[in-house]
Image: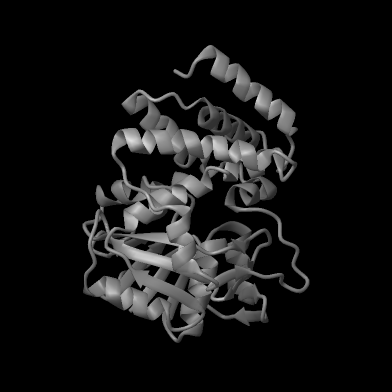
Length: 323
């Protein structure tokens, strides 16, 4: 099969690199300066073991489909619909993305949709360069059909991913794992807004407590941190990379790149949406969503807000009542 990775940033670039190193036919889809760098110099892929330049074909948009193509969608959730415009709707799509809204959105247009729960610590701040910090495996990837189940293609994708540098599992209840990952990702906005001062972990836990109440009210199952730790073990331990400083997670990187948008509407905003649907107040997640969106629009750098200011905004929202 040919794997077409749409969104060759931190996660997409790392998955594409490992598939390429495993001997698979890979096409990276990127834009702007990143695409120009990939075409001119290749992908500079840095890991704790060292750095390598990989000459992987890259394109800026849809190409004629082959019968054996698989689309791996690794864009931020706000870019999902636009990123799939022009691609053959006969192709299977694997949503290698945070959040839980992408699969349903893609299923409106494509009949064969797969969820991928991604545990892959990586960074993309410089055109043409992706750093992946996981060791001994770059990432652990759960793959399953949406909304549930596994099939022959699931097994083939998992086998191909596992050939070089990645651990992968066929997971019938992949969306349960993605909802568990969503809980973890609710702290992304906190990190992006305030960095890592004392007390930021407490605020992230407040957001998760709200979310658990919402998911429980909605009857949506989710994996637990204990389950995740048991499955991951020490397969993807974060290790330093020589010559590459590590910043923050995906939302932190969006602000650091000054991209003008951030994924928070599909992380904290997912909890806000479910809270409104099921009558559960979500003031912490609402403020995190709102402030992260504002910082992205204004192109403010990460950690530009004092924690005290953010906590004050949340307290104000809690006092006013969440609508």
